[in-house]
Length: 251
Image (tube, rainbow, N blue to C red; front, top):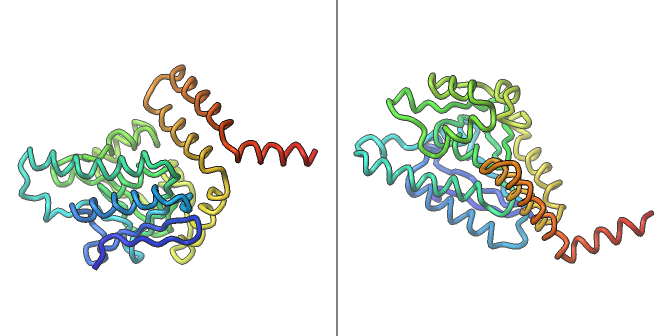
């Protein structure tokens, strides 16, 4: 059975975690195949937006596979975390928008991968946590870095310190997810949002993503100058010329 499924519908690539018997838990094979699927989406000029989701309605990703981690020493744990970080970073740095469609449990590494996406939507049955503390460890794929940036340091620390699970509506209130849909309509609604994005300039979208991400990594002045460089690059495309000409012609 393929642990990652890849499906392309017009300009949208749907990448699905597919280990339902293990609640789509992450392991080395999943990380490797996820990177391969993301690479395929990035290389395909016809793909404008990527959606990540999980098989079934029980889990998006219910964390890392504990069986693979339980006997690691410190060196092995570092290597395990680095491999997971590469997958999360691939999501974060992909030159195309990535939306997480969270269909159930989104725990541990699953939440860290969702945090690496551009934004998240969820079914009403979704549940969220970074519960590593309950196993005597901590997040290892930038969870301690991305969650505070998204929902604020105080609430992030509370969730990480306690390992508490929150529901979809609380996640919505915190800004962790943008929308909550029924489980039956989750993929259709996410695809509709992706379709709105897919109709926009791919060059502009890529530059916007780079500019916003850069803003979380550096000071305001440096990020603002980077934004200006990105703005200027938009004027090197035929699409910009065509769209502006069409706009002016309507006046």
